[in-house]
Image (cartoon, rainbow, N blue to C red; front, side, top):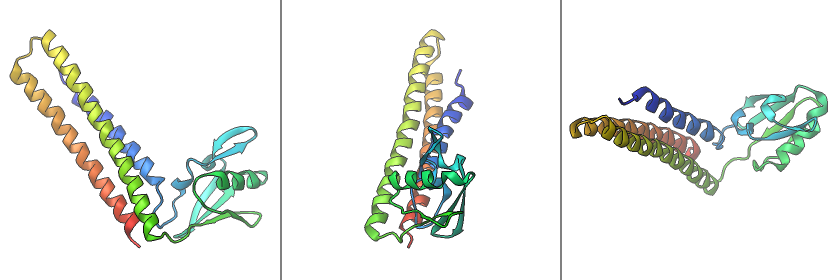
Length: 183
């Protein structure tokens, strides 16, 4: 009756999305994932920066961007300036360098708050999966003439999966907060 694999797959997707979203939240260190949402005007089409340039981390607080095509330098610089990253690109003709400023204590707290908000969204997604599965199970239990004990066992199984994935989300969040708040 209960498709545990399907439920786990859906909950794991929520965790994967959380990891991807948290990678974009900046810690004190540079990460190429920070630039995933920067869209560059590539021949009239908005294209993610990682698809038009190589992004490396030569130093802990520096990103180096090397466009695949020289004529994209200005478009990339413009895209970074209008993004909400708050970074100023510096070009030497071959590379565009982004130096991350040292985070203030207030900024670190704001970033930790943002990370918690993203984590809460992931928890809500997992709880929504639980709710949907519980509703489906209750509907099908009436049709399948399932006993109350069987229904309770399956509802408990869904709750155990929910608890497991909420704990995973909490651990990922704790690690991210530690990264953000560490000076």
